[in-house]
Amino acid sequence: MRVVFVGPPGAGKGTQSKLLVDYLAIPHLSTGELLREVIRSGTAVGRTVGPIMAEGKLVPDELVLGVFRERLGRGDCGEGCLLDGVPRTIRQAEAIDEIFAERGEAVDIAIELSVPDAELVRRLNGRGNEPESPRPDDRPEKIPLRLKVYQDQTKPLVDYYQKHGVLRKIDGIGTTEEVFGRIQGAIEAMRSQAGRVTR
Image (tube, rainbow, N blue to C red; front, side, top):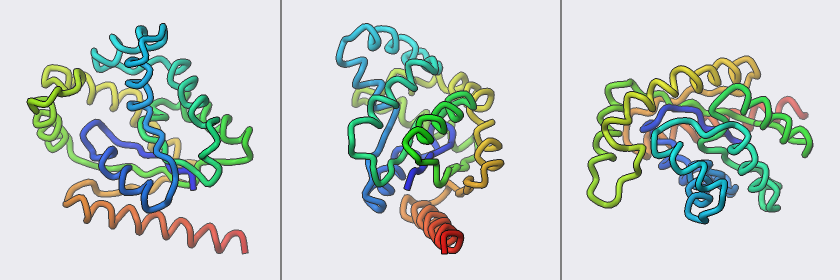
């Protein structure tokens, strides 16, 4: 199963992704982690990406898609994968659909984690104030820009996947277990629906 997570910074995508990849036994393709890996590598791409991420801005599509295509080609995604942090724009979504189509595959479900703005700010403020090496883009002064970037460039993905019939909106408020239970329910409902279609 190929799963896309859609949601603003602080919605809990990282936490829920870890649970979901174990549940589905598929690789977790976290673009944020892949980009940070590139930054740590010290390559030319990493030196380009580093300052962009530090400012809380979106990394250009060609760089993100290049990282994604390379990771997808490593051979462990035959049974599916979970995309976390990509796509973030309609152009990326269309390009990823094309990459999957080349492999005879498609996105099976897009999960939108829905969390009110006030709660997102509270979570991100808490994360940015952690003493153990907080990520540069979690600093409090970067939060308004990150949320604005999401609203302007990423939120349209909700409509994109809604039109494709694969979007499932999940309430992101509650305990980790409660939110994951809602995600499991959406996954199993999608599997059941797919089974009825193929029979």
